[in-house]
Length: 334
View 1 (cartoon, rainbow, N blue to C red):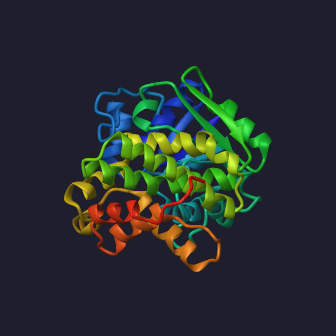
View 2: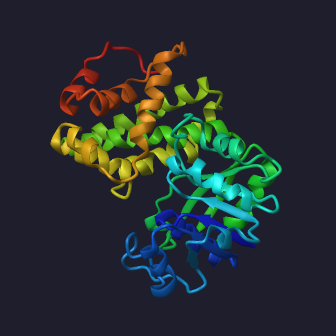
């Protein structure tokens, strides 16, 4: 099978190795010529993995047409803000339906739609088979080293989820299936906000007790929001919920954690928000969720999201914000 990969970043490279190990043909599409040259000439991707040598059969190109041609699967690994625009370029190049494997986590920059809905809004069913998303506790830095990893293939169509499950699975990369697209995608997005909060508390010097409380209450908050959006509550207690949440809140590999860490260490977000150039999905996701809950009568509270929002967008200091969270009205655990 030929798998076309949109992106030449860390996740694109790691999943390219998974597919290559499974005997498939992979080609990555990129716009950074230095990354393309690294992959094709030096057989590495030094920007992301300084000590990993890639197989020569993993190749990259700046030609979208060459990458798409004859592909049966199209893997999306680019940041969410670019997905719609790139898919508009992909659309006229598709001569037969392909299976989209989505690995982008977050919301559409312009519409706030989930990624699967965005993909379907650009590429209708004459261009694509049912969308499948790869979601779960997985850092590219470990996958590319072939460390044991378990994720979930999520699709509204179980047969296509099983197809991608077989396509990806091997001795170090195990894939389960799920049909709760809403729960998995909201969990994948929401956990990035909690990861920013986790970085903040680490930057402020708090320890394991604080992080355990944050992850636990964050999971509860995530499940509340997801269920009012139509998800199955049980989904949040699996790989795409608590699994993804724990790894993102606990690892220095997480860009969202790193963002929060920088903010916590300075005890304000002004410098970070003014100068950050890295993709940090949790920053915009925080605003999307905060505004959604504030403008709809869902009957839920999202205190962690609200607290992160105040730090990011209202210049509240992290230390004072945490203090205010601790002084909320006392209640029974739910």
